[in-house]
Image 1 (cartoon, helix red, strand yellow):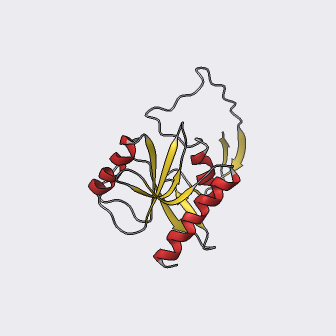
Image 2: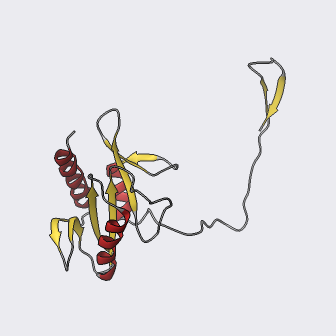
Image 3: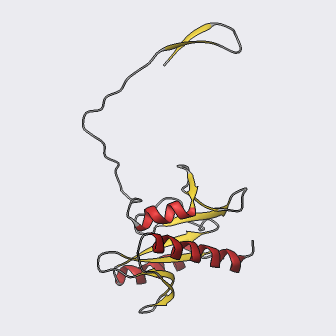
Length: 163
């Protein structure tokens, strides 16, 4: 798929996800010194989606992100290729990578964690179900159930106890 068609397809999927959630979305929306591919206006959490299929430096991305931060807008970046010199996740720069799967569907690569359908990602991101946190928290008391079972090793044919 060429870049323009892919860019338009991603834009339409963002707008479609917003429509399903009953949220207004504006394409190619301009603000004070910035222009978002798709903008979701909100009094509580405005979001600007940037679809970046051509190479862009980390410094240029941060410069553009700063304009969103100044206007209290959450900028969400959908890149096709990794950003040079971006070596770790940054809470101030939500960057995700979009790729085609074998069915020509667009998916979001969440790094080492997993890959999900773009539409599912968008609905969860817009609904604030995807968050950046410096520390993962869990319940203070955890319950674990260990189950042991016997299994014969495929190689040595010895009986083992796995859990």
